[in-house]
Amino acid sequence: MLRLRNLTRSFGARLLLDRLALDLAAGERVALLGRSGSGKTTLLRCLSGLDPLPEGCKLQAPGNLAMVFQEPRLLPWKPVWQNVALGLAGSDARMRAEAALAEVGLAGRAEDFPITLSGGEAQRVALARALVRGPSLLLMDEPFAAIDALTRLQMHGLMERLWQSHATTTLLVTHDVDEALTLADRALVLAEGRICLDLPIPLSRPREAGTQDFAVLRRRLLEALGVGDGEG
Image (cartoon, rainbow, N blue to C red):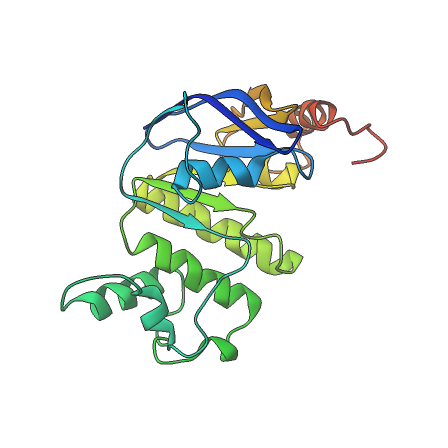
């Protein structure tokens, strides 16, 4: 589904990404972790086309991809359905937008304006805006970081249901080790410009954070992130 080779990005004298390579299989859910400033968002921006690829970098990716940001980025002067349908062509744009809203649990909110939404509802709208395009690849940049813990758990359940329906290849950037282990098939850790750990997550679903297997994988991720047992 996605193949990236030799991605190097620098900001001034600082080397952020160093000949980075990445592969995603069709239908795979991959979590990307790393310390703040390690280059996670920069990588997503390059994959999405928001930032130009540097010379020598090779990328094979589907043309129909979508990105969900940490902030919903809704247009406050447009009703919810128009935010979801932004950029869609065709007379069925509203119908498609309302179907996407129903999928994320917001049926009946099409005419509401963003100011009336909670943080979790606004992020559901942003997710519907991405899904309405039927992307083959979904890029998510810490989409649940700004919402409360209970809403985050609800969003995790929603993502599981949506993946069962769509089987969309997904790259999820997160700072939350437990979130990565709960949602992903594989977890990557980015450090010093490269993937320093590629960890399969062979846990059955639904996943329980209190199991021994979960704890073993959690410890491996924390170690790769440079966090001691007593810190995470």
